[in-house]
Amino acid sequence: MKRHCLRLLNSCLAVFLFAAAPAPGQNEITINPTITVLGSTKPIPVSLEGFSGEVADVLKFDLYVQGFSFVAPDAAQYQISGSAAGNVQGRVVDRVAKATLLTRSYTGAALRREAHAFADDIVQAITHKAGIAQTKIAFKVQTPSGNGEIYVADFDGHNAQAVTHDDTIVAAPAWVPGRLALYYTSYQPGNPDIYFHNLSTGQRRIIAGYSGLNTSATVSPDGSRVAMILSKAGSPDVWVSNAEGGSLRQLTRTAEDESSPCWSPDGQWICFATRMAERRMLAKISPSGGAVQRIPTPGSPNPTEPDWSPDGKWIAFTSQAGGFDICVMPADGSAPPTVLVGGEDPSWSPNSRTLIFARRIGGRYVLSVLDVFTKQVKDVARISGNDSQPAWAK
Amino acid sequence: MTKFNRKKKMKMMKLTYLLTFAMVVTLAATGCRNHRPVNVTKLHGTPTGGNPTGDEPGPTLPYSGSGNQPIAVAPLDIFEGMVKDPSALAAYTVHFAYDSSVVRRTEKSNVQAVADALSRDSSTKLLIEGNCDERGTEEYNRALGERRAQALRRELAKLGVDPMRIRTISYGKDKPANPGHDEAAWAENRRGDFILLHPKTGA
Image (cartoon, rainbow over the protein chains, first blue to last red):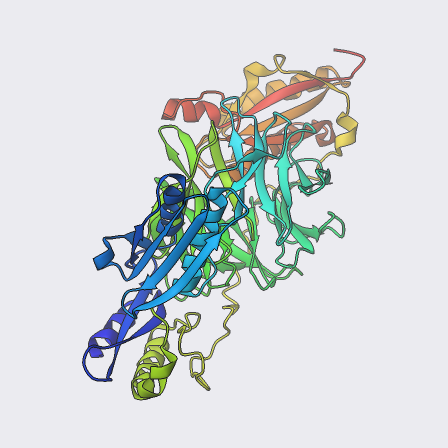
């Protein structure tokens, strides 16, 4: 007990998860605290039997990037078994509690989709949290010419589809929460303008096409407002408008450049990158205006590209000290940032546990997904060219 | 991470109290107000205080006033239909230091040459394209490129050019002049290009 308390005291970034399991011997109970620490949590050992080919690949990918490791059945905490003959059927047994947590079969979709659905059920059964296996991402694909298109895909990069066909410079896709709709920047009109694009109808329109820079749109959690970077007042500043681009209001008035705004999940703050006294830093401002408040990132210099987790607890961002690093810190500043892996432009999954980000390998960018607790990371399927600026649909 | 077995719950009450006490101490000691323990949500009066959204006001820093106040942008429609002449002023590209939008003294003769060219033909206008090297994140660089273009616009205004004749565009790091990944390439890519604009009937 004492030892555990000390460990808790030592880990300021801990999320506390207490697991209880029946102990051997009499009816006594032992408490096995499982401490979930950013970047250094042990994965949950599972075994995977009976699957092959694409279904096995999907399950391994989905579970690995959500904090599971694969071991022999007799070493597993949870035994996952089943088959993919015709359709996906699966079972999850808690080996410690000797209980079957899940038995289910999946029909009516491609095997890949059925496997993702099973992965989500596994995550729900074991962690009691929604999984990410059936979520979507949007991102930028750039050819060597510098031009590119906005794409959407499954979170693992499969089933990618271009949503623009302009062969121009594009940037910064952002989802409308709960809708098949994006905002993004396109240079199609000869100027970087912000588009709203309804993916269900295929219709799009410019919501910010002012002189100078119009970019980095980001939608409020309730979908009613858009924060963005405009330079129409002479310098890149944070502005906010309604979803149509109307009721435009300038929030920051600095001679410096602001970039990459994001919303807090309660809609009370817009966090962004800026510079004060020659130093780059993160700051936040109320969407109704007021003072700019600094968000310190001790030990992580040159922060940009903040993204606030949907559960409100964390802010992920890119730090630049030589190379680029993905960092995560508590949104209340109660602990310094933790440097997780090399990469840029993190975007949170809907369940606030996984990040998608861009990293450079061999002179080109690929997208990777990262479980922030175990630091398990995998590259997603690639489109040719540079894949960057991922945005996770929420 | 098994969740509590409900049947065993009563038997665990004692330990739960102990754990609760340990956690309260821990939370108070570390100030981790946000990280509420998952399985102990039935506590009453958790003495951790604070606002769970972490919205305490931090220090408010005044922005340092720089001498370079923004100049209102020129409306886009006055440039509509104008014809780009990328070669006319290509010799006068201005280069910048790393992560800087300050127009260096050594670059000012180029800016003067552009001002002279504009003064020779009042029917012309100017597009300034701001660009960055790859050592910055994408949207940060898009903003930095805009600041570079606007810094050049301000310099031209100081030399007597009507800023309403000048529009800016930033390509961030999307249009490198040199695709290399070394200092020589980066130095070439941190730049502002001047594109002369002719009226549509001219050119």
